[in-house]
Length: 393
Image 1 (cartoon, one colour):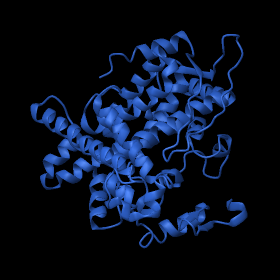
Image 2 (cartoon, helix red, strand yellow):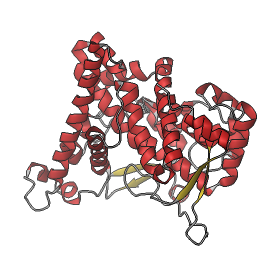
Image 3 (tube, helix red, strand yellow):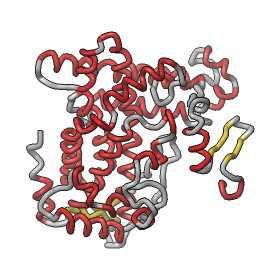
């Protein structure tokens, strides 16, 4: 579409301007960020409470205050405090792949959930916990509120937001009410647990510590935790799920990544974040867009370019505030899986390879559709490496 219509495409029926070129996005959203940093808030977003999400909140004094607070926890200089939680939860993910490989998509979502709650609240949760379920439902509700066309009656007749749920065309009211309830619970429950654990000396939490230092900003700090989950859970899952899919579809790339890891760090330990600069091909696999790692290796700046050049994190004042943590999580997962497992297409009962279409969902937070895959340890040594992480804190 961009090649035919250019870098800017205006859709009059939706009053939407599509930026279809990186140079145009940089010119508008970074160089002119002062006037292009706002967010449109639709009626359904307000009803769901999505407008309280820092990523979706309109540009304002409150947004700038919340953003500064967020950066105190997630800025690059302090991100190393999350390394232990990241290593621990990714190792747990490896063990789950080892013992129940067929459930790899569930394990990927569980990894995203556990990381946020462990890193920010100091809590261990399982996918079956009611809090995890409600958090996931809240993500789904917000995803619906952001997807144009999900509630056509409300989009066409905004006054319907004032009508009760039983009124024709107002079924969205029930969706919004449930979304608000879920958001309220994930805003309150984990924060209270984190504060209680810190006061009792049974746990630590960056958010609880920040609240103790800034008692007048507790509501904003609670919202930070909620936003971190709502913004990170599905996006992290989508990135890691896409990597797993890519390895099934591109075994040659998988082999090259494994060869690099073996030659640089050997087969007797797992990768860590300090290895990153020594693994350019793995870095190229991590990069987004078309799956051709060599183009990043051979590019002008090489694979280790600035995180600010990864457009998936956004632009200007709206660039993802949690991008340093997110990037480390995805990279370490990619490297750890490559070091320990071989991923391939599954075979049916007759021994024939089962095709993997590589299709994605059409939701706002899109991810690969379910498919069958075979995930096996690369060797007995790799299996032992995974099992050796069982006693991780």
